[in-house]
Image 1 (cartoon, rainbow, N blue to C red):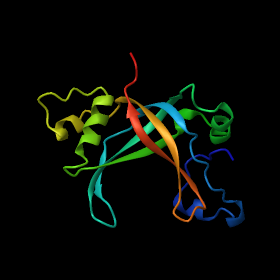
Image 2 (tube, rainbow, N blue to C red):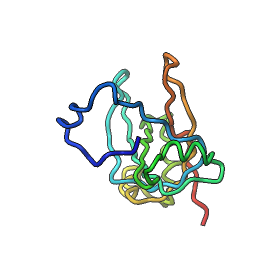
Image 3 (cartoon, rainbow, N blue to C red):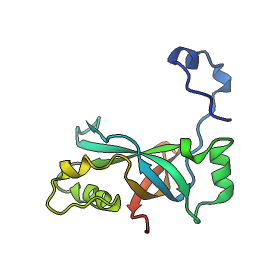
Image 4 (cartoon, one colour):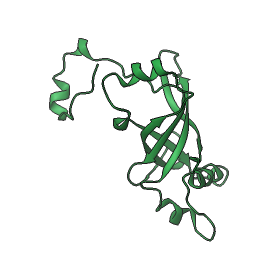
Length: 153
């Protein structure tokens, strides 16, 4: 099913319920992305753990991405219209994951606070590795960012 133009909340609710399709997850493999906009801050719903979340806009698929799975995921759409979220908890034990990702975005970290480095993330380029995770009930499959990598020069 091709993506429709942005619809209003009211028009979305007017879609016949038997025509709603579950979105397919992005295929596993490496993708080049750009950080879209500013990161968002929040806290997890259960434990109230603080986090920062990036939105990555896809710009290209790596050679390790199955072409048939990519075509099925994209349908008639372009990869440029697809995004994925990536969340990092901001606790002392987990902060290294965030700084590793900032470095993979090409952000110089020497002499900078994490907050200052985060301000440089919009429009940064990064390569991500996507894997799949089953829902707790085993009924759905989700694509998630397993790790980030530097984009080779």
